[in-house]
Image (cartoon, rainbow, N blue to C red; front, side, top):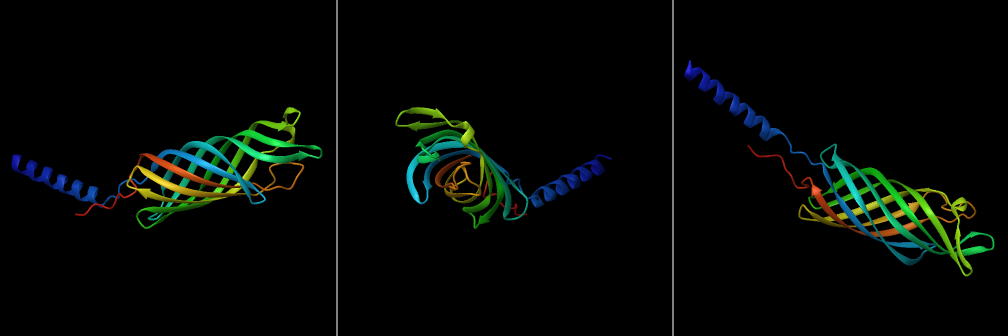
Length: 199
C-alpha cells in the first residue's frame, strides 16, 4: 500500500513539474513613466514640460500586448490666439489616457501605437493685461501616438513618443496639437525577458 501511494505521489509530482515547465510565465508589466515633453504648434518646438503617470500592458500573443497608460502634466502651450483680439500664453492641467497595441522588437525593444484622449482643466490665458479663464474657448482633444522604447534590463527603459492631434484643441482656430516626448520608464512588476522554461 505504501509502495503504491509513493509511486502515485511521484507520478503526480512528475506530471505537475512537466506541466509547469510547459507553461509560459506571465508577461504582464506595470510601472511608472516620467516624461519630458517638447511641444510645438506649426513646427515651433520651443516649450518643455514634465509629466508622469502609470502604465500597464497585458500580453495577448507571442509578440503582441495591449498597452494602457494614464498620466498628467501642467502644460504650457506658448503664445496662441484663443479668439480674435485675445492672445497670450496658454497654460492648463492635462490628463491623458493612452491605449493601443504594443509590439515586441527583438528582446529589448517595443513599438506601440494607438489613441490618446486628452482632458484639459484649469485653463488660463496670460495676456499683457492679466490672466483670463478661457474654459469656454478650449476643448478636450484626441491624438494618435507612436511610441518607441528600449529596455535596459528588466527594471528600466528609455523611450521616445510622438503625438499628433486629430481635432482642434481650440474651438475658434484650426490649430493641431503635436508633441514629442522623451520618457524614462521604471518597471514595478513583470519580466519582459521571461522565456518558456526548458525541460
